[in-house]
Image 1 (spheres, rainbow, N blue to C red):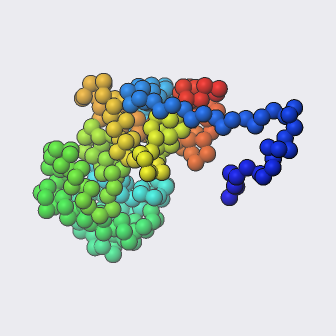
Image 2: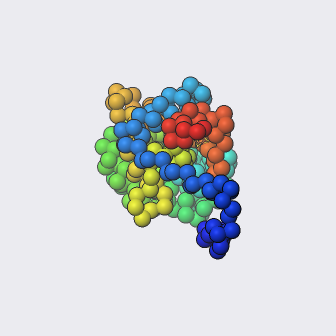
Image 3: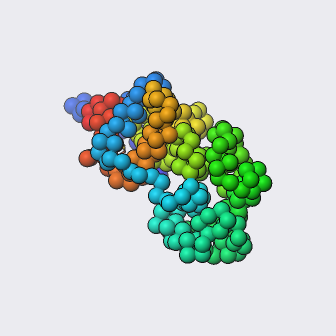
Length: 264
Ligand code: SF4
């Protein structure tokens, strides 16, 4: 690790003709929540213009979305597709099909997407919850208030906020935004949000609140579709440009960097 300590005596040895060391770049001033939301909404528009409709979620049924939301945790989508193909082959891409599988059979089928010892019981727990509390029906689950379903999902094993919100939005059509690592990077690199004191990263709830605020002026009936598209678009720009090392050149969101990095 590099030390930040000054080298002893370096100031004394510096000749008067030498230029003083450049001062560290000033940290951009924090933007107000309203400004951050306005900028994020404009980013959405640029992404739509750059990438067009994303047609998410890639699935043939609501239950397949739910399976995908569980299986994609910590896993690339290609691996999820292999597990889904196994489940399709076994006739288990439905609530009834999954219910009929034993835990051991399920583990084997979803092995390609990893963490199968954790994901198999988690999927079984979802089906049990559906059976016991929602008459085994996704329609009954869909008819329940989103905030009730979210709370219930978060109480299940293997379900964090991102999975719960992906299920609510993409499987149940609820107007709930989904935040992920790609959105976190964008919010951080564009200085839309900062971590709360004592935290290293921006929280999920802060990202979710920022997204809600960004689309708050859009008509309510349009919000689910907007959240749907926005999440898919942030994944698209994240994969193309905003990975662990940002590739800002040519990125559709580079226009916004000028607001916090005026020299760019
Ligand atoms: S790659 Fe650069 S311009 Fe694009 S979203 Fe990331 S930080 Fe912004």
